[in-house]
Length: 157
Image (tube, rainbow, N blue to C red):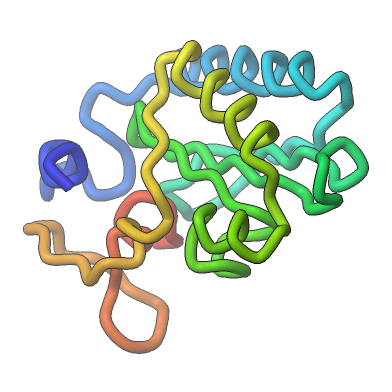
């Protein structure tokens, strides 16, 4: 939570003040290549996420995982934030629940988490991102209920 509060600058609600599209693209591409290398597979990659605090999405196909569930890695424009989900964000209440239900193997999760750390990113558990947003930024929230930290760093504007 400390990191989320630290990165939450109300003067820069859509991207960090020091944001560089060139740096973000290069870092994201390195991460995607490393994930593909670790799983020996071509991942589905989306770099064209519009009107969002999310820079991109990397999907490890289900056929490349032990449990047969795809792994989704979401990269925020607010570096170094990354989130990992089994199947899709919100499909499980975090990777622990997916592992407990036999849908995510610890070996696959460790592969992804190691690449994330080696690439200079920090993986924020989905459970933390679902906590109600209590920061200073005035969010243009488009969901129902209360905005969460997910909305702040991965959601749409």
